[in-house]
Amino acid sequence: MSEKEYSRYKVPLAIPSYGEEEINEVISTLRSRKVTLGEKVKRFEDEWANYIGTKYALMVNSGSSANLLAHVILSNPSLPKHIEPGSEIITPAVTWATTVYPIINVGAKPVFVDVDLDTFTMKIDEAEKAISDKTSAVTFVHLLGNPCDMDRLMSFGRKNDLLLIEDACNAHGGEYDSKKCGSFGDIGTFSFYFSHIISTIEGGMITLDNEDYYELAKALRVFGWSRGLKEENNLSGQYPYIDKRFLFAYMGYNFRPTEIQGAFGIHQIRRLDGFVKIRQSNARYWLEELRKFEQFFILPKTTNRGNHVWHHFPLTIRPDAPFNRTEIIEFLDRKGIETRQISAGNITEQPVFKLMNARKVGDLPNARLIMRNSFEWANHQGIGESERVYVIDSIREFINGVK
Image 1 (tube, rainbow, N blue to C red):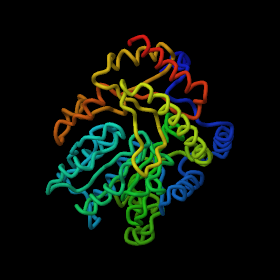
Image 2: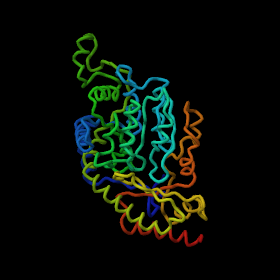
Image 3: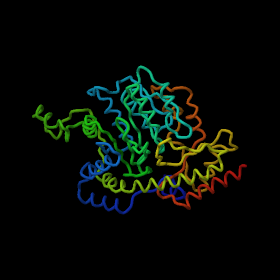
Image 4: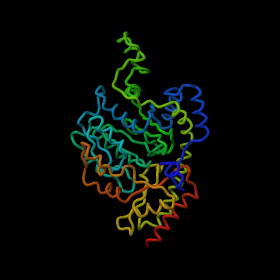
């Protein structure tokens, strides 16, 4: 989107979440000449692990890379329990594309299940129907910052001896039963993309407690080399004729973040709880006002015992409403309120699904309805009382015009 297009919205989907502290930290970083994977990244990692409540956190260059790294780690054949090629991984049909692609990248088959219409999170009953003798894992998503029902999901995982990959890319600061999202699964993932709750412009993180996974993550993040690993000296001793700085023990990637991203992160994390409070306040207001129009809309709900952080605010038009999604979003666009579909929508209806070796469980009726009748608008730190009232006034104006 160009600056001209961006500026025409009174309520844009995202605005910069950084301030002078981040800018000054970046300038200091540039002047230091230490601009890639160093002390500031490590500081952000340590602070993030402490915030989430895991032993380890490892930063990468994007949330998509975090998802890929999580699946690659858990597919490593050196691990006693790992994702086997040809096995199946259960995942929700309403999700983001790069939640799904890593499943295929590691040679597994995604199995898509339906989501709840009001929480947008995976239906555990449908996941139970998806179990086969090939099921090895579940990749679940706290979509839009709404925590999944973690009691049922963890019980389901234990019962079926499944690995759990927790996509918390929208859920910075979200909690279930006072435990942070990103601390439940075998590996959790986060995105710090520009439009997310906090941002390093581009960037991602994995969170985990298992030391073996962490050692693998450090190697796979940077080419698969042995630098910084516990086994570095042992490997160097086995291969004394190879420069220890360039000793490759695994087949890895280049997922390195920059020190500039780390510089953003160490300041953004201090803003997070305040940003979440703003989003939750906006959501409470919108929910209260939209109850007046429940004959037209299915209102979003927070998962029981969850602490929703409202990455965006979603709304679903009832099938019998006297208007459709196109009509309302075009009206809101004319009013300067930017909207979008829910994440990637129902991924099984995307053209890319034809390229996947995948299966789906049932007809996915909720995912299909979300694809056609749901949309979301911005909910970020730049939305205050006047903006949130303007959104409701605009929706009221639209409804009054179609009654």
